[in-house]
Image 1 (tube, rainbow, N blue to C red):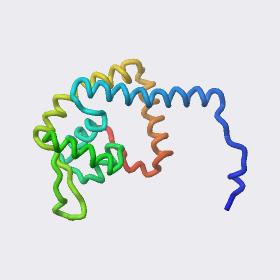
Image 2: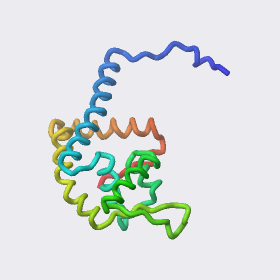
Image 3: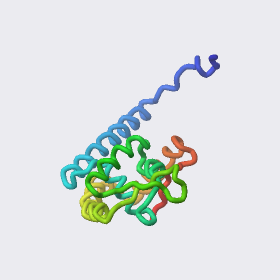
Image 4: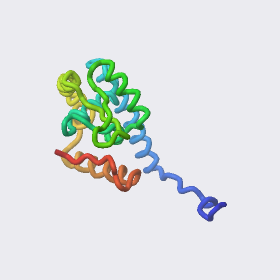
Length: 166
């Protein structure tokens, strides 16, 4: 079944929108790669591995259901499961059935895992500051926050992964 909108002329990007899109797209790819490279070099972790560990370190009891951790780390459950297997092998995370509901699995940050986050966080924060925040004014920082929130809401109107600032 086709609708009228299926045959409508595409809404092409204006020159200004295209310029902004290319800048945003390039930034997203390059920033992730730069953070991944810094973490691999300095801590032997991928960006996603660090995100999972750091997210667990901030959770109550350093424990989350795997499904919640996947959502908060912005990854799929299957990707997270593979990462947690690697992190378990290093002794930084352990899994256990959820005692409240055995259908779920809990990911628990070990003491060694917490120590790894504590050791890794300063270098990661320095790199984030260098790559993102050092070149922005206070007004640009507020704009970046507002823009990011609007784009995330367009992708996920309920923003199930929203993290509130501390």
